[in-house]
Length: 329
Length: 179
Image 1 (tube, each protein chain N blue to C red):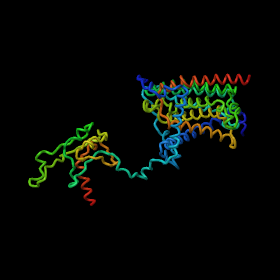
Image 2 (cartoon, chains in turn yellow, red):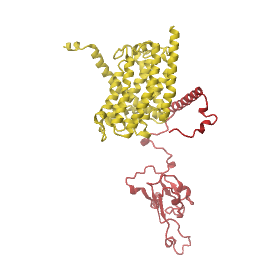
Image 3 (cartoon, one colour):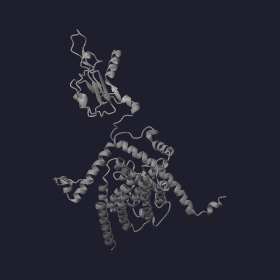
Image 4 (cartoon, rainbow over the protein chains, first blue to last red):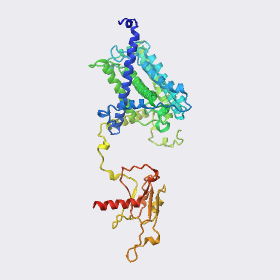
């Protein structure tokens, strides 16, 4: 009776199950992050934040999602119809792929790839294209300006990110996310962050810029660009952009956890819990930073990257290479 | 746009006069100071109340549109002496008042009281008002003050033109009734 099931290769079944689980995780994670974000914003400004829907407002993101689904999808006159519809899909779809080679706990991964990190870095670039298409196809000056900013920012900050990742790769000598995680120990002094503190800090700051988070949220600076590249999006297409934004944050933090903070390893608790603890600690710092610092000016932001972060990351890479050569003889 | 005037950078003690590592340390310290402030604020008690269920009791500090203060001997008549200083002080030209005509200023032939100086009409166009308070400061007889009504709702543009004399009379009538 179940014979047809046995004929399907197990890899396909594993992939299908992984995508379902990842999809559920992404949706729940985004709602949780929206709730945490608004609560932190409230607490920092000494007010309760969302409070009325459900106990302590825990159901507010659910109400938000339902409201978003009920909205009318609008398209501006003169918009490029296929590109306008394609952009949100393109922003979101690669993100599920990116999460495949990550190990969330012992043997808890979608796809064992010896080029896992390369896959992550390659598909992370697709988001830039999606933002660019969204801004271009909207036929709106704010959208276009936001998209132009987003592209300039993402292209600039991808370089220090790659240089920081490369410094870790010099040490581990593998692109396999699972091996990189396994190469570190359970205690903080055994993590890559202890050996590469500068790379870790730079990676985290650039992750803020890559995910367009405050203080680097210039592509959607409300005061100048209304909402930046997603000005014209409503309903589910906006919700998908929103989802993609929070998922991107989560992915960057997850990569940071695996590369620098020892992955799922940790004392006392079982693996997946440690991964979640580290992941949400980083995300909480991201949210905390957003509600603390004002937005930087655009030329300042690019100066920061080109004049300071890239030279620093290069020096760090050089030092890493020299030390590794000396140590390994 | 970069500021063209860079003279502030030459001032002693400005951050750009320090060496690069010192600037990095200073910047990092100021960023951490900001984080520590918001971090501490997050655990302090809330400063807001759950509005429809709880209302603050300091509403008299609210600065609504201006209103007249009644005279001590007749609360339905404003202290105003129609000097027009408020109308001139107003940067937006919200206030239009007309003094009484000479014959209307008589208090009655044998009353022995000085002629009335309170205005014939006093209209406030609240749609233009920016609540700057210059009229309140300009008034030589302290006839104007801010009202404290936070629950005002208007649905038509015409309602923004408020007859302040009628408002004072209504207030006086209400106060009398309560007595």
